[in-house]
Length: 424
Image 1 (cartoon, one colour):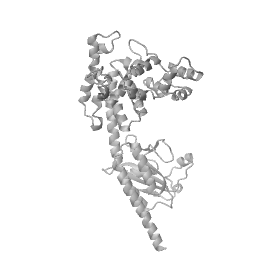
Image 2 (image 1 turned 60 degrees about the vertical axis):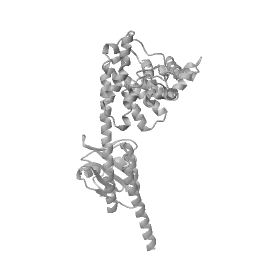
Image 3 (image 1 turned 45 degrees about the vertical axis):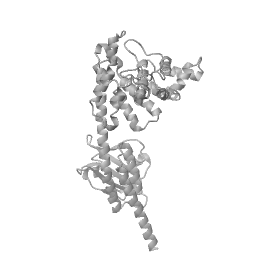
Image 4 (image 1 turned 90 degrees about the vertical axis):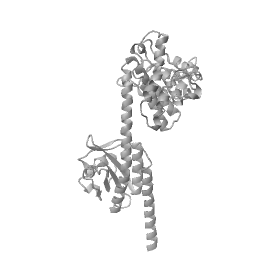
């Protein structure tokens, strides 16, 4: 019997050691998305400590609170706790482990969450997550050990997990801050361009929205969607080099003025070429400056054609034309939607890549309507019945409806629903 018990204990310890090594490998695997990282950390910690639930609270130094974007049993709802409240707050302030054997007997435990969710908290183990300087940047909390109560060995293991996770969380924070800074920089440049001509304001954001939806229809990888997003966002950056009276001219452009307009692609390449992009984004100047190249080689600025045009530039080209003709301009109102779709269809293989057009036409009508009205957030509302209806039709479905000689009652409803949000 003793040998059997010893073997079972050894088996349990071996499994736990393997889990700890696996945890260390996973947190060092360069997961830079904070939500993904936290989900992984919580799941692994819960299993290693044989707990029912696990939550990782992060510290918000600006508001002096702890928050959790993801918490077991709470769905995607964010939880915020003042730093001077509760068990997690006490651990963050003191930097010490708190191990509670009976939650309801401890006056620091707030029973409010249990009352709301119906969950019964019994045992709690909470430890700090500290950065390299020894400052608490968050808190690990596990609830209800499945076999008894949390012991000193569990405390030691949770501290070890917290130390390993802290570096990964810091890296994810740093990456997130860099991303936010980069995006605010792009947004500021785009906003500066928009302020030169209020009529075309929001064009870059709308093109970016449609480009992302097209990339998603193609099932592009996440990092490719990111590259496409930033390239789209900056595709017209070179217009800062075009004289304002030409950009806002309402009549027909002279040949010289049109050459000035065309030069914005060259300026885009020059401007973006001076920005230092990390390795995965170094194609941005090439992509962003090539959205006016045509499949048959008749485009500008270099007259390249077919596969010589960067693939993401071919996506942007479709989205750019769609937004241009569905938006109000100085000299015209939005084109009727069937005419817009005919332009895209008729120029397949001439201006547009057929693969990109096909993917664009997979976008559902609800996203098309949202994209067209992207800059009307304050006074733009889609009624729920229209949302349900528009979501059922792809742009390709809608094109077939519009191209038919007569509509069925159901088709008439979707045409009317779309018309309520188009060209307003």
